[in-house]
Length: 218
Image (cartoon, rainbow, N blue to C red; front, side, top):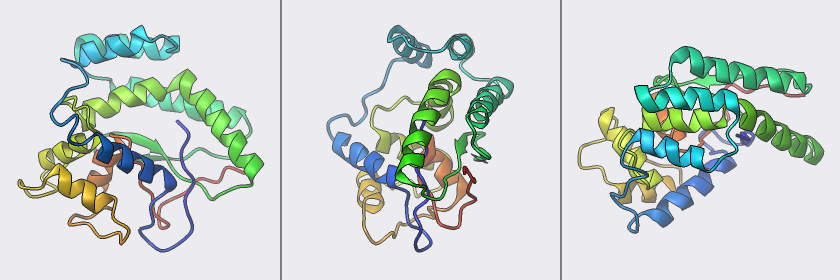
């Protein structure tokens, strides 16, 4: 759940969380191409629940999703509202959310704090996230960003980009990995387009820019 802080710098600079996701996707590509997380959304949720440690409020939402194939807007927004309140109760000034065209929410980045502040924020956001929204967020991300349940994050992103007609039909996973992991920041599609970012964020590629709205935590 912990949201990376916004890095000061030139427009287009990625937050730190994006690089690890890109490396993970690149590493999986080839070995998991075409493989699925599960045969169905219901089966994937069952796998998550079998691992235990899902808070009861989230398990109730996931159990409904197993039978309906969706998470209602009201349930999703309630999960995020509870997370926000949990963080406010811990003393943070505000928790600001970015809403993507798919309906997906993600917490806005923040300016880097002190080492102690960042450590506390990481612990608190993990605690509140685990209690109220982390599992719901993962399942919602699958529903809107990876309905084909691809095991490879990069393949899931490219599938999402194709479904939303954001890249040409011949755009490949290999090309995405090469472009996204490049150091010059150049891609053949608009990385700041909110639909593009929705595909990325729903598949654990968290990308932020210096021009993004930020939350004031302290």
